[in-house]
Image (cartoon, chains in turn yellow, cyan):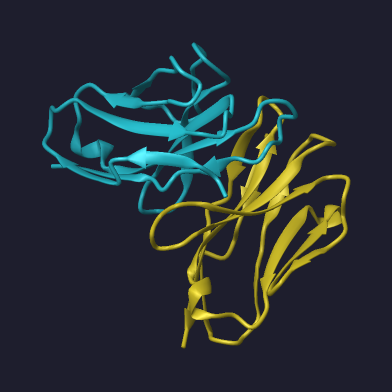
Length: 114
Length: 114
């Protein structure tokens, strides 16, 4: 069965600190995709990144970076120099090869204090 | 930028009422989804559709029903609302084809049943 685990339920940091959100997944598929979404207090889910299982290159987008390691089945997300606007719930997700359904982790609530 | 809309954004209603939550997208996506999200943050898939006249139940059993008469429209209906239906409902859509297409989410509807 496919599963996504975000062991950190809540993280609290002070502005300008770096923070890493962990994501561990389980799948028997050899081809799969991983995603990160951000859910600010307003409630919508904002797509951040998609990564396929054949591409283990790390990716950086501004203050955001992602570390994908197949050997440990992890897809961690780091925010550098965090800002108050980064406060949100972050979800990691794995696609289900049965029609593209997403399996979500439990979410990590990040609080960035000024 | 995703163009997917949900109305109403907030709804407070009494027990026993029939309600319809609207979801529309202007991206021409074939696949659409409904998720339920309780205050505990986890998202649960309750319905999905691969195209017009296609509807399937998701992983979480729900008393709601859906219809897909037009590509752009995927409404969710509760025939008789109960307090246990109080939750946030999120609609999403994705393009057809490779089953890992990114899902784009609407702003959500926060439903409270008194």
